[in-house]
Amino acid sequence: MDIMETIKDQVENNPIILYMKGSPNQPQCGFSARTVQALMACGQRFAYVDVLSNPEIRANLPAYGNWPTFPQLWVKGELIGGCDIITEMHEAGELKPLVDEAMADQPQS
Amino acid sequence: MGPVEQQIADIVTAALAPTHLQLSNESHMHSVPPGSESHFKLLVVSTAFEGQRKVARHQRLYALLAEQLAGPVHALALHTHTPTEWQAVASVPDSPNCLGGSKAD
Image (tube, rainbow over all chains, first blue to last red; front, top):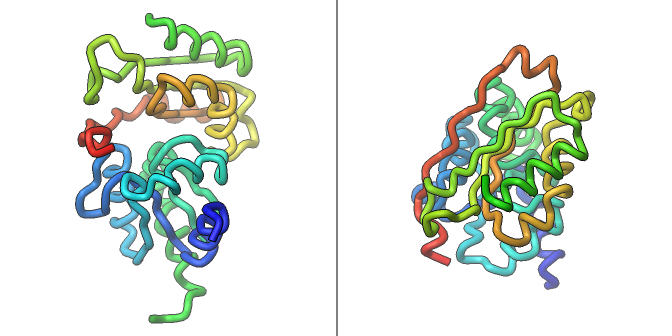
């Protein structure tokens, strides 16, 4: 599959997906760590991609989303933002309703 | 102020006519050589952001600074407000510390 199709497939088939450096348990960048912390505080399951071990995604996602840096949080196929936006949304109490709603219309697994 | 920092300030000032602009070189907080211009934090308060969501504001800045981001600038923390929002917030959050990810590249 073409890399752009892979990205499209990932963001459209995962209600919540975080592109980050490292993993949620071992983030490799302070911005990724802060973002994953805010997202985990919301208590929903989410998918993630470690861009350090997926160089093709790292090279191509910036063009796909018109967003040059990581982390990137995508919810229901839409770019929500990077570390600064997610942190601000979390502090304003806006992040949890957004991810709760994204999961609400998912079939239970 | 380094040359890249100056460029960023000039570009943003020309394009968005900010009522308030605060740019800090935070490269020293990361695993880069002394004197680097790789990590910045930028606060922009501008009427140009009225009616725009945060994602759109950041995308605007990324587009303006595409050349810098494709070159020396590795991280750019962005805090964008309209003058009305800025009156309510009036502070810039601290940026996170480095966790060494670039060493894994």
